[in-house]
Length: 372
Image 1 (tube, rainbow, N blue to C red):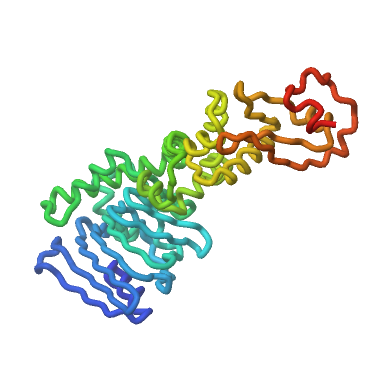
Image 2: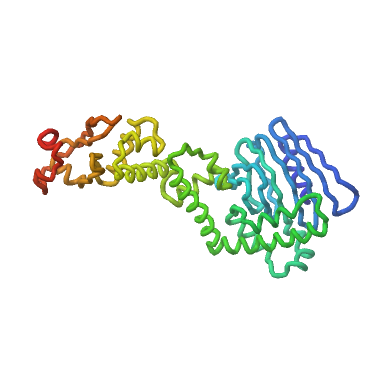
């Protein structure tokens, strides 16, 4: 089975209209393949540059949820997403999500499909392992393509392209001289072999951490803004699902909670400067003062401290000592430049021991009024 027969069988199975044509009669000329159904459209321009090695320029749009590749083909698939992206799945359970500027590699022996509507453009290579070895082996003697394929069979690879890999794929375009394309293909296969070895050693994970660290710094510096997941994914060149999954694995929290905590940390610093709660709330991105007050008190409780925004800034008391001292805890909040008191009820029945500090250490304006 060659690549044309393979793709023909995949799309014909779901009733798509297919069209194949060759640019001219030369063996190394471009071929055009088009598949269209009521739900999706595919256009691929391809050329076989070496025996069993095919270069594709593909454009995909529509709903591919019914297209699940079930025919197994002993081949290696490797490419670069130039625009758009998609959410996919391998073996009906392993996430395989690709965004613009991502490089991927996988085995075509694994069942694969996409989820929902997609819109993307790719430059990709397909290597038929049964037919490539004789010719390809003469050029790349140090690459074991069967072993390379087995690595991708066990763990499909998706990484963000660096400058070098972008330049490598940018040299591949359909107006390029065929001999130059052939050299670019050989260079890209050497790159893939080195990339897969680095992934096996864990070096790729370090680079991923680098993008996540940059994302964390960006969120902290811009936490007052209304940040959207879509805009963040576009800024850092990954899909939304990949972004949220990687972020959660690295920071052990969600992006929303990370932004919220960053706002609260900044609020603490602003309170130390003697600013009112209205000023602080506005500077950390809150319009609703009550929502800010609620989140700030919750944050302080999680930090195991009690903060009192008084005229001299913030004074902190141990939450355990505060609970041991009183049955009800009152947090002083300054709203709209007027001193008002918001009650936070805390059951302190388990803290019945005598307080460790004397009355003189209680702020004067709270003595005898709210503590008994």
